[in-house]
Image (cartoon, rainbow, N blue to C red; front, top):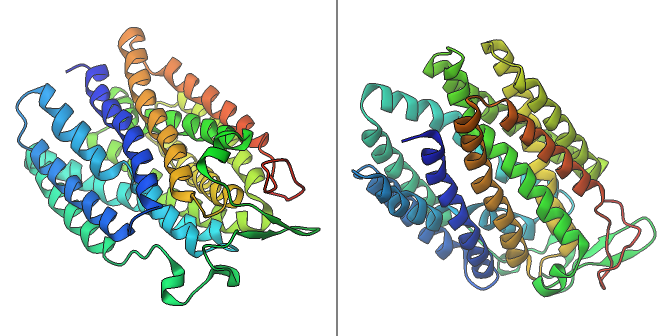
Length: 375
């Protein structure tokens, strides 16, 4: 299979995640997150186990693209919608903690998968990962609680069914919007496009960075460590920038993070040695974590809790769409040009555009108009 074909399997998975993220967000506003989490765990494990048994490329479209999207498509929205409902004042830091799981996954899974493939087979790797993922997701989901009020706890003393009041320099501004209201707001589309562009660039790198390293005569294990470095620094980026965003302002840190991310991709365009790729991975992973955390926390800040699941689900669908386009675009450019230079340049442009989107976001009042609250 060509690189555009293999990356297209992943891109089809991400396109299906667009639909699953929207459905998952809708379900989060109506059902217990424990049931949704168990459902996702079962399909994640089933997908990876069945993928270990495929014998034709088209079968991957069912076992990997379709079934895995059912299991993981709503994951980010489910986790961070639940966390955002529980925390208000320290939302940035808490979202940084919950979303850091992606970085932990990169640290653990990339070397494990490489080891299993190198010493056994890719079929064994999928089987082992399927069992681990299915069991862990199902068990962890048993502890998810949607409504803090059921435990006699209310964020900032406010019952969840009441509008969220955000303290400003002058007075409280009530922000608690439905999905229909959010769709009519510029803030929604700016957040959505910024996340789509961030995802496009990130997943282009995530899917193709190992192949790029191998093309530059770097060993498979050293190439896998590039992903691990991105995962490690991603965790610190989410925690540090998430914490700072609670006091410094999320918009400023989001813009700075995406601008430096774009600069890191410009560096990657001329990086061919291992130390240069490692330096890129450290910077890119840290700021990827920061940019993702600030945008996620902004969703709850701006739109409130009433329909947060649906709103975050739709915005997450934009993330999934970007993840579908990015790897396929990178693979196509490589197959046409024979290198990744133009692909990485396109990713840098996408990040600079995403920074502009975040920079144009303004606070809102309860009618969706601009207000004086600092983001």
